[in-house]
Length: 312
Image (cartoon, rainbow, N blue to C red; front, side, top):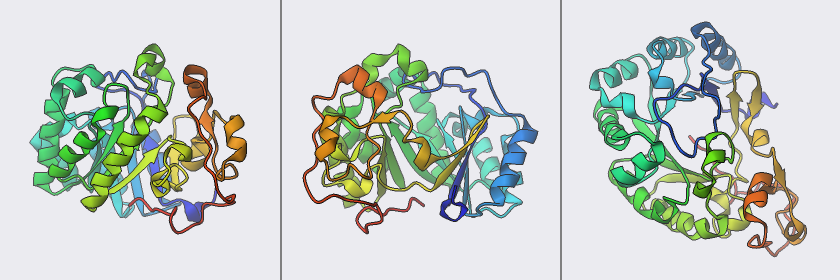
């Protein structure tokens, strides 16, 4: 792994969670790192980059030691200290103030819908939307920056533009659209896996809205053939992120290539040399009939100005 290319380190603190999302790619939630293990992860991370560290899971904010972990990260001088969260703990204003005072600079919320009914049906927890949005308001009031992840499902993909508009109104800084990883709990809810072909126009429209409002956006796990005209937001963009899992460390740009294959149509695509293909599990579930190659001169690398996009 090229240390000079890593600008962000995400520490997976464990898999315990107070939501029960129907699309979750985690299966076994019975593991959490000890405080000592996470602090060792933080210390090692500081030797690679001081730009950004992010706590993820599971749900990091339900850990009893999360304030201590944030303080510890702050002692190493990271420029950005953030947490990926369902937002519910932030509905407690005292918690929000305390964690921000301890050194947290921002959060990446996971709001997957524009209505309580739809969001709660995906998280499988009643009032999770109400709590998350209350947490959002507390973060804004207390000065924290907020980005948002939206996991795309059959239930919400047609509403991506509306969700984006709502989050813009609430002051979101950036939105990441995530096509779901077909694993974990999602394997029991395969009806939630949407067709990429159907999803594309709604992602594109949402990106147009975000562009118009000068918001940062990108999309994970959608092959570039479904992002024509929106290549600079596609998964060809380098994330330059290191993930520290319970049992391994991976470069996310390499990790997301796992389990991918190129189908017959890919042989004539101009992106075939730089695209890792389609998730094998997607092909097994949906087939490859709607996958179309992109005509044009062969692209040999992604170091092109229109594809470069640093997520801050």
